Length: 122
Image (tube, rainbow, N blue to C red; front, side, top):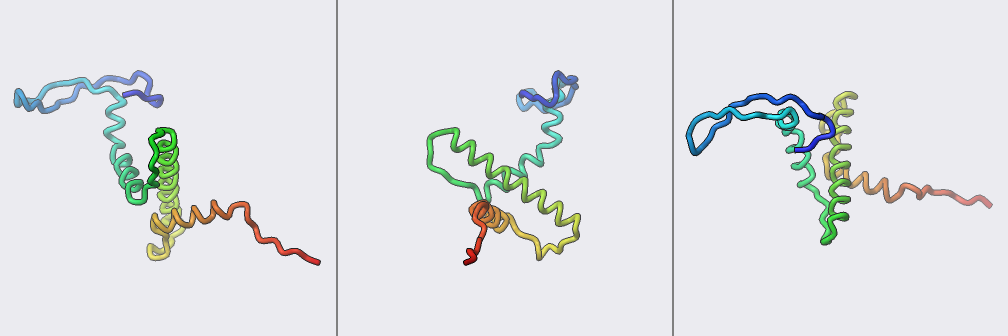
């Protein structure tokens, strides 16, 4: 596993179960693996949120699929930050937007970004 967060971290001995020999073995675990296992729950949560309302595109180009995945990830991370702000400002749970409404409102705001209503005077 590669990381730009941890250079050449320390290696630690850990015990893992071996099915063939039916005993514990001591193996070396790099620090980057330890950090990943520690924060793996956050990775699973964001994957779950993205799967709820994923942007589907029928394209064989990996660049488009990667771009839409990045947009999905940004939306889900923004929604999680929105929930943290709601907690901080003590907004009731019934008054908060769910993920679908958040994404719909975000899309509506992005569509209407440059369209301000200007009335012409005579």
